[in-house]
Length: 131
Image (cartoon, rainbow, N blue to C red):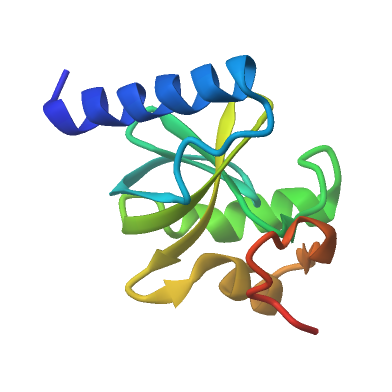
């Protein structure tokens, strides 16, 4: 296992530990995860290496709908692309949550412009998407 992935797992462990032991404490203001998109789970979840990342403030239709399948197909175009994710420190269903960009272009913005995905203001914790 390469050292970058080990460091990422260590960060995940520390964040999870602090969230469990001291729920009101933030372990980090934020951290960054960068790497290659190895898998597209659906329109709003990617994997960087083997680390799942839920795209912050993005709401895509589920894969059991035609719109969801279309969003996943579009997102699949970015498999094997270099991605940089600013992690919020939150976890969602065993996935890190982050604002991600590919070639300095915000992934959530790309998805909302090209699919039926929408911004989800309730979860825009850094208020990056003012509609």
